[in-house]
Length: 154
Image (tube, rainbow, N blue to C red; front, side, top):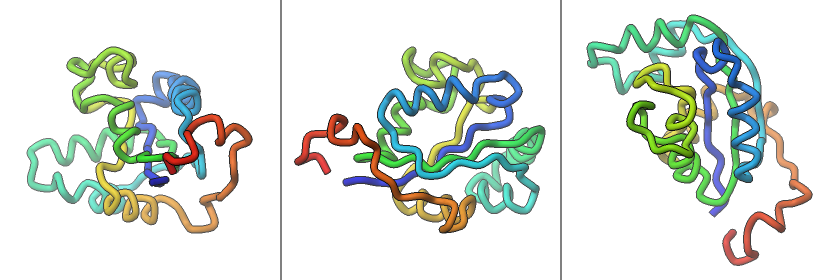
């Protein structure tokens, strides 16, 4: 099934000059870019976004790190995109992420780990609505879509 998912390029990605590399790798893999914008996140938005971590001792540290520079919010689409993007990014701790994944190739941190990616269809829907207005997401067919998937995959 074709799905949409949220990916945030974290402040560390911008600070390290990796935005182009990360976007390039998502595009080369075949993910379809449906929306993208740069934005500064504030405490209220981050408290909502990371509410599931609110009882963790590192909650404030995560929010503080996410406010050090802008993020780039992206909506990516593809067959099984939510799971595929998560596998492509690698496990949370970059020191333990497999080579070939974004985190395995580009970071060595648990927190400064390049991207945030939605973890389920329900989360993706909530997160996309949190970061994008409907008019900021676009429906368009890539000219090479028919060469990404067999016609029975979607």
